[in-house]
Image (cartoon, rainbow, N blue to C red; front, side, top):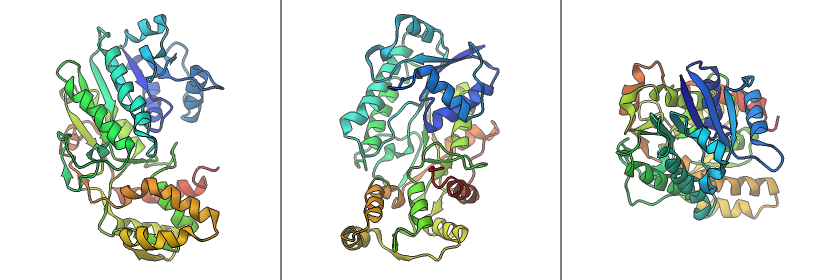
Length: 363
């Protein structure tokens, strides 16, 4: 029987991984490293996550360990540190996913946090694998086809999140010959492909909300931009399935739609407007929107409009990319494991329905 250490259990991907681990009898214990909040203990935060995924905590099996990846020694007590050393697997999902943090703050959890997890891993005598969740957008400002084995580039980054995750991957690459590491790179993660349920209303949900509520009189997008989106159930299923295959160690996998399943912005907007029953507004080139239209709209008296435009600044790069991700390694590994990534347009109606039912997370 296996004991697994999970970080980031309260995050979007981590909670879906946790839900699956909670149902899997192959894991004797699931140790969740959780940072307490000002109002809630680590155990209370774990219980809240389990309640949302309809999993009742099992005494002694799903364990909250009070700690924080940004603290020295992970903020662990000596007894908890000894407990974590008993684990034979790590799934490291903890990360800061904010796009607008100063680089030093992003590095604190995404780079230094990874360093501290590596330091812990070195002390674990039974460790069989360390699965690290990264992002496909370590590719930064590249605009070509990115292969899974590739990392190093000098094209720059759109934000501190991309750069800090890139630096985190550099750390992991350097020690892959010492520790049993596999790296998983999702693209833009949205809700469950079957239910639409999500714990985060960011990135893709911003343009969906803008379109649904008619906030903008014009829509800026490049019709040929590639939109690479994956549902959270696929990401969680893929991480755990790949984790059962020892041949995946020392490798990196794009958990992305890839060229076979991504969508152009033209096709995406067509599906969205048809689903919403709305007539598409005027489309303008992103460069024209930035230089001419946006400055004019920012001078209008509507606070809602200005707030929408400011929020969109962080997400805009991901709606203008022609970057694509090769998925041959992941597809080949997952083919025999019963995990399939659906195409972007295959489940978009479900995502939109769930967003409208919850009023984009307000209900």
